[in-house]
Image 1 (cartoon, rainbow, N blue to C red):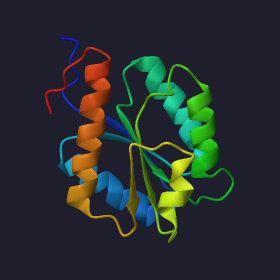
Image 2 (image 1 turned 90 degrees about the vertical axis):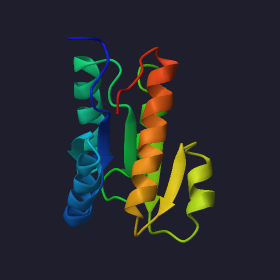
Image 3 (image 1 turned 120 degrees about the vertical axis):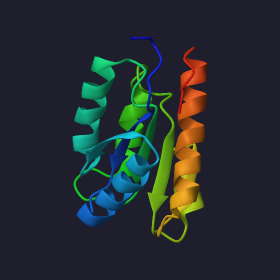
Image 4 (image 1 turned 45 degrees about the vertical axis):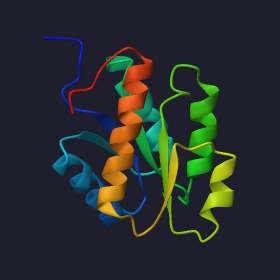
Length: 142
């Protein structure tokens, strides 16, 4: 078994069950492994679990901005504070109208307005994953 992951591993953080499932199906259809999380706190636990198993995963995080209990912004602040996971790229998704201004302080790889365009989402996740893995000296096959 080589060092190259056959499939990019993506953490999807979304509180709405239907939306989370749709995002998962879109990404899995594109040959990616997906770990779902239902809010920012759940995502922090999942991020640590995934990262402990393989320090180069996840390669990207699809993050909802508005979530109860623990928001996308709160998750991102914690993620950025942890040197091990700070550079995992985040694709922010939200229905808020002023997404660009909300997103600025979170320094995402990209921000997508809901409803998300599946092709745009997969292209951004693939680009983010590839750049992340290249920065860490690993070339994705996907």
